Length: 77
Image (cartoon, rainbow, N blue to C red; front, side):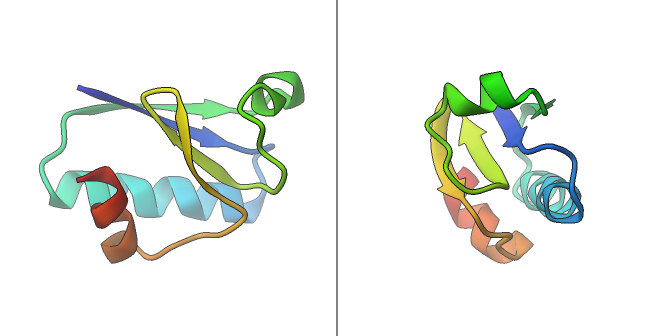
């Protein structure tokens, strides 16, 4: 099971990233747990400079953009 973390303060882009990530993970049949990290101090621990961000299993894999579900499938697969 993969741990997916959406890093951001809850803005529209953060919500869209969460929605697209959920769609992508469901499409590829990924077993996952999703967590939204909104505390700025916790976000900074990932070294994120531009929100939104995406971390998989504790590793930052994306920052500052909202890819399509198809692009996210490649990141998650």
